[in-house]
Image (cartoon, rainbow, N blue to C red):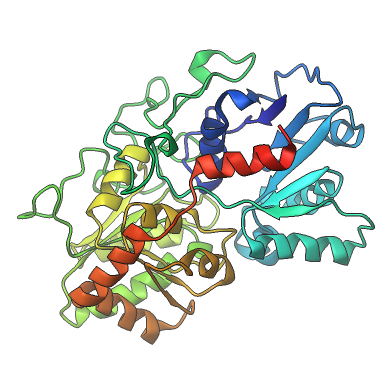
Length: 406
């Protein structure tokens, strides 16, 4: 039996990449794994069982996990995402910075670890080497799924089996009421209206205006049909310095000022520690550039619509574990302009992407102008995105089951 730790994914409102990954993996494993909530789980296991940690953790967040893993009452495996809090502590959530050294250290006591990219695997092995870990566990690369979601408007990618397109029909966590297991169609917290733009603290983002928080009823630019976003770029990710939206705004304002007409949709909640100045700049620029939009509370259904209407997606990020939105964009057949960093390079190698060094303003301006104005270039990249092989969450589940012998 595989007991899948899905403590945070059950009711997490922000649809971060980590929450999306844990939720989609749980869906794909289906009846092969039992989702558990660490806070309610009785931890009745046998030595032949597996405990699979698909989320970040610490002793403070999951009391007793250190003793549980080191006690070897069952076999244990974990999914490792990245070492970003150690590499960029000045722009990472303080809680993550404090948790990460202990988290990476405890991973060495697991029986198996699955890294979400070769780059993140190398970071973990490098950390263990630096710490002098004598007998680290094997670390395999687990490719994240590109298939986006299973919402009502979701159509399988051309050539993809319908079984790879799994929705949010997962079972409640053992011991948790059904209301704790919220999928992409979740309702706002009690007392909140459907139009509320809720952040990680279930409160409106500071300073966000109603126009900045466009929900599922988002309409295309005036004069465009619902399916016509031929001049739209989409950037998906939490608003924070690591995702580098400020740099993207610099490049786009230069292009707008040169006379190039296009829309830029930025979808992501605001990091309460580091995102406020970027969000304020977006609001200020909107007064001059009407093609700029911020979707601060986009759920999966809204993201699906934004992906479907984008000419290209843009990811100027400076650090990632894998770059899940890049994969999800390719699954939708939407070309990508992204940062030339190792994790994105791994996923871009099959085609459909233009990669530019992060911070190369002239290079990014040239790439964005090209994707917006060169129809032949866009058609080639879109064709590559639509036809290239891509991993699915079903593939990820099969890899896990094979490696765990389950």
